[in-house]
Length: 124
Image 1 (cartoon, rainbow, N blue to C red):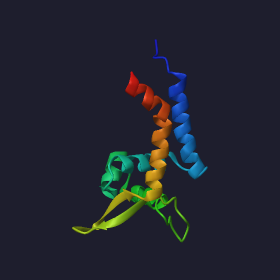
Image 2: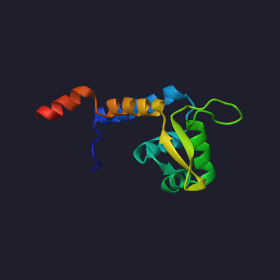
Image 3: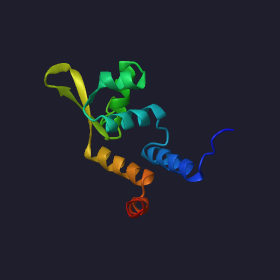
Image 4: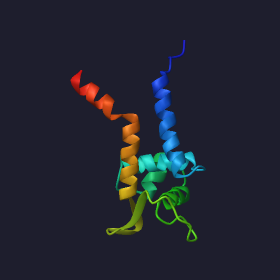
């Protein structure tokens, strides 16, 4: 018999996906996965991001560009991450969160672990 999924768990996933959709109604799931991977391993290179997601480095670069301040051809990006040249290896780009990216990550954390649940867990 399959494991029963709790309604609150499904609701949490839906709320996280809705938060990404509010950023951009057409946001590809690969962008969301890229953001979460960067948030989990801040300072990751674009090559390492590609490897972790199992995608081509060119796709990882496009994802980072879309999540950065400027996407392409002057089109505004989401400004959640920034890529900077690695001073030790100039061809390598290191990706970190921007202040907006950190604020968005905090909003996602609040969805996954609401303040009332944190208090209840401490008293239990």
